Length: 95
Image 1 (tube, rainbow, N blue to C red):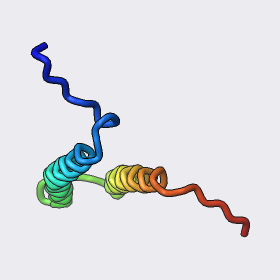
Image 2 (cartoon, rainbow, N blue to C red):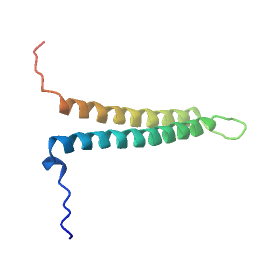
Image 3 (tube, rainbow, N blue to C red):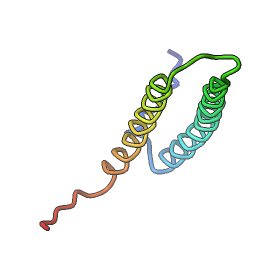
């Protein structure tokens, strides 16, 4: 080693933490744009399977495809919701 030590994120100062948050945001935007665009394009390709002149499928096939897509989107949504819940204070109330 030549003496250059990069502090861990938890040990970074306030100014370093701000830069880290900014770079985390930039990474999120870059990756989200790429991944969502790719997912949308792939979903459009799945929609192309509906062309009856090129493909033979049943209603059961369509139902299974739609369920798989819906389940995965729901799981993705739940991950984001859980991430927000971890950031907020625990709440309790009796109804």
